[in-house]
Image 1: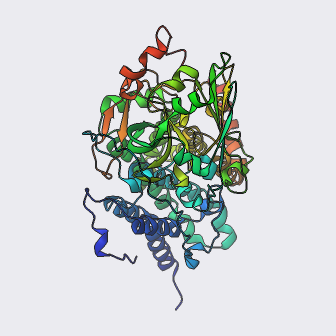
Image 2: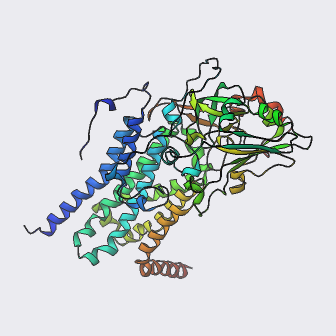
Image 3: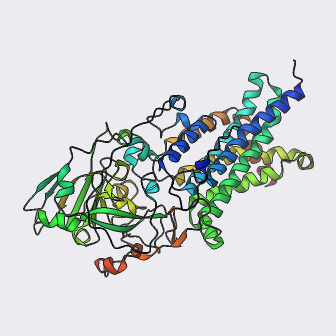
Length: 209
Length: 332
């Protein structure tokens, strides 16, 4: 059977939903049954946080990969992947607030202010929030050209997430470094775009002045 | 997705999670390896990509029962044994909490030699059997407060550090006590890592008066049995008014010295970890507010277990006089 392009997209999306939602459901199922070791709270926080980062990186792979494997439908799943990254980031933040801080608002706020790694994590979450709420088609149309420049924010957000991860570690830097290298390699594919972006910004500021 | 549902999965809060379930959990997490990423990275030194299929079960380290004088029971809810022996910070066996219990099961503790030396008139060595016979063993139920803002309540078996030090007859030059963990890259995979981390062997230290305080304890067992390797077999320090990292594990050397000895975490990050490391809710760590902690007992994800942290972990009556006149924000 020959799959039409539309069918391919549907198939791809179905697979992605399974791969991206499945682990979260499974992990929380295990957590509720108390099967995540001595401290399920820490396990959940680490799992959701690292998953958010991995899904973000998966999102960055799509654009450079699509032309190489000649799979146009791939380009249509970027939003889905991005929204899953935000989904994991939300689970991460909520787990921290609900299970770790146990709904203590004042502690939550003071931790965001006082712990640099949490401040940075919060900034990254806010960036993902902005990208997520501007992801529906009608918002995209309304934003016009500005939409793309807004969504270029992701190129900064991923390194910020890695900084958050690195700062959260008591010792060691190998794992965050591996993520950083992968990210930088993926960002290289956009090096022209990113440098154009900055030069344009400089031009506009120069013009304004 | 296929979810196997076994009857014994339905635990109540009161149940102590048993070995089988802990093992299932590891398999589950291994299978997840969620998008491959982490499988390639650091941590699991011993894991091969096919370990999910081979399912080899490593024999567990054998502990044995000890004779001891039991502690008087108090109201504190203890952390179940399964949690005490599966949630460990022992970077010599890996940096994840589950690493030590997975990687340390082949650790050789017999023969063992603990050297007591330095500024003493009677240096001596304790062999493996001496650790259990030289001193009368008693049980102490202590709170353990980790610098990462979680805590446990653990029934240790052992003897007071003061007894051991007195036996060595310290000279008047002895002002501090320096401790050292076994250095054995063959057995301790974490010590092989060359990338940014603790400089091995792990070392710790106490002021002599801290070491002589009746609370300072050398543990050779927990929950009625000899220590499993992940908890610091065969002998470890327990100083319950200090953060957990002071309680050095698998000790091979106790040396009485003139000057303040270096300590591992302080060497790695002096602005984060001080020499004293007394539990203090008023001095925050750059990564954790120390004002409160999560007490790990039998509860799970939804347990409301965040409690206020007490100065000196609640042992102020016993130890606060040691620090009279000291600025504890400066000497953290």
